[in-house]
Length: 222
Image (cartoon, rainbow, N blue to C red; front, side):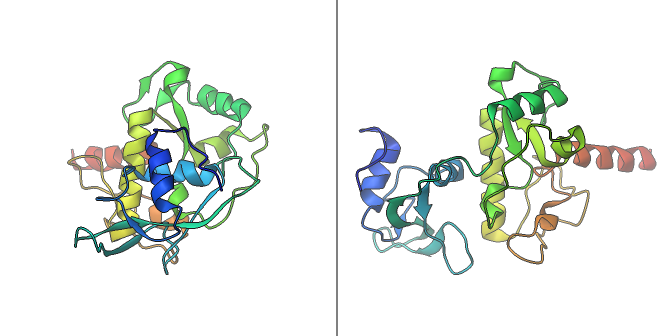
C-alpha cells in the first residue's frame, strides 16, 4: 500500500515506520505523540491495532530505549473504503451546533469567531467501540447539548490528552488546580471500557454541567 500522506510530513514518516505492522515506541521511534493525531488517522480509514483491552495503543518495554512507553501499531496497510469521520459531523450539523451554543467556547465561555471553533463529542472517541450512526440535520437542540461542545483547536487537543491519560490510568482529568467531579471522584468507574457513564461528572466531559454543580456547592457553603 502506498503511503497515503504528504511526503516529508510527520505522518508520512510515521507511516514508513509502522508499515512493517509491528509495535513501535512513540518516544524514540515515532514523531506523532498526541492522541488526536491517531484519532485523525482512524477517521481517515487507517486501521490501528489494539491491545488486549481494546486500547489503540500498548504500554510495553521498548527494545530500543528500554523504557516502558506507549507503542502504536498498524493492524493492516489496507485503508477502509469508508473514510468518512466516525464523528459523522457534517458541515450543516457543525453550523447548527455553533448556532445553538452561539459560538461559545466551552472551557472559558468565550464567544469566538466560528472558524476558530471545533465541534467535539463530550464522550471521547478513544472509548467508542463502534461507528456512530450518521447524524440527521434535524437533530434537536436538546440532543446537541447532550452530545456536543465547542472547543478551540488547542483546547480540543488538551481534552484529547486528558481523555487518553484517563484511558491509561483510570484517573479522570480535572480543571487545572480544581479537584472536583460533579459525579463520582477522580477514579473512572465505567462498567466497561466503552461505558459513557464513567465519564459523567468530569470537567472534560461536560464543562457546563461541571460548573453548574460546583456553583451549587459553593453557594451552599456560603
